[in-house]
Amino acid sequence: MWRKSSRSGGEGDCVEVAGFADAVGVRDTKDRQGPTLSVAPASWTRFVAATRTGRFATRP
Image (cartoon, rainbow, N blue to C red):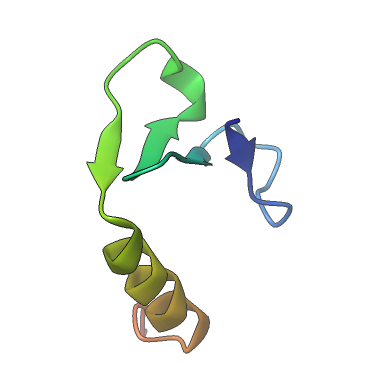
């Protein structure tokens, strides 16, 4: 099942994720029939953890 973050804004520039048996899928909400990124579950977990700690935050 594809899902979108509850923190996504209403501007339409969001991504959706889906957990599969051996991968996590990522796709653009504006092009649901378009290409899908597929990453290993462990990689996705590390990405989410880094995002939560602000590792990818932009600085002025």
